[in-house]
Length: 160
Length: 267
Image (cartoon, rainbow over all chains, first blue to last red; front, side):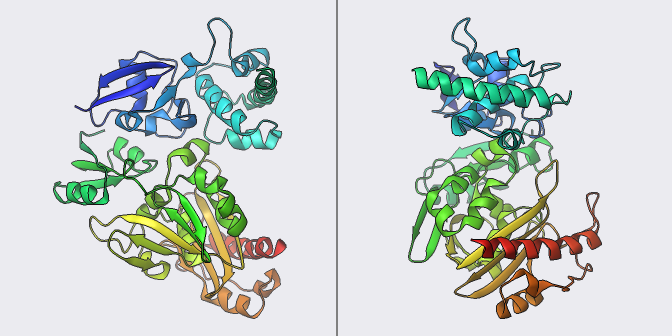
């Protein structure tokens, strides 16, 4: 089995993985980071969205080996200790979830979106959510949360 | 997913050798089609040859009236590239409308073209802009490349290296995406360039992407939406599936072609 080194949430891991292991399996079953959810396993729902080298990807549609040498961020890596990431805080404040299953993927998608769209329109937010499905159909509050979270991220960036 | 051996190669030569030495190999580009196919066990190759670590396969260069896109260039990078936006805005827009943001961050132009899904966007770009597919062995003109559903002129083990697009005077792309998958129910690319007018339709043909000579002839006379008025595309060779019938697709081709010309002539 190939040995890979992957940095997950700022910690380096050197692990042996099967050639056909998915990144989502590495994160959940090997590293026990179960915040990354598997919703559909057919590359449609986006619940497994993580960041690989600062880009949002569906971790169920990428081989673990292909993440060798990369920096991966999962939902567990967003908060700073007890302080929620601004996007997490916005989802909480705007009740951007119902059952919560899609939420990790929604938030990872939203953070990647906000980094490229500091002042989005609502239509742009909805377009940016194209790869993430919510079975509770709770999109209205998700969109509101992302609009607010994006503004909060821009403010936090300006304060730095 | 069935087990397979993954080859992480560093050069086109190594990739070719790994492919040749395997019982049944597939090349892995961005994996946004191939990995779902493997997960559903619709294919079970013995070996995958990953092209991700080969230098020089990704990136975009513009000059001499061409835009050249490396085969491993991600859709998101095509959509965001300043030279593509300036020289062939229809190509930027097409790339930015493929799938969803996460798919665009992984999927590659070469992978899409090697797969030649009949509802994919890039085949319309290559055929509608008259691009040239450059492989590790030869150059293939767009008109010779697409040979039917999921079928191309690529030989066994042949790899796309880059795609060369001539910069058109005008081009426009409009698609009606399937609301869930974002694949094309119908997509139409029109262009007017050094080699004349081209109209390419994806998503509709039983044999995949195709050109519409009747539209091209009218647009050669007058490159305006009105030139296509009243022209009907026959539904005989179009797809009927659970999403749409052939008659509806035929109607969409006319509507979207007029919109694509309007877009091409708006700027």
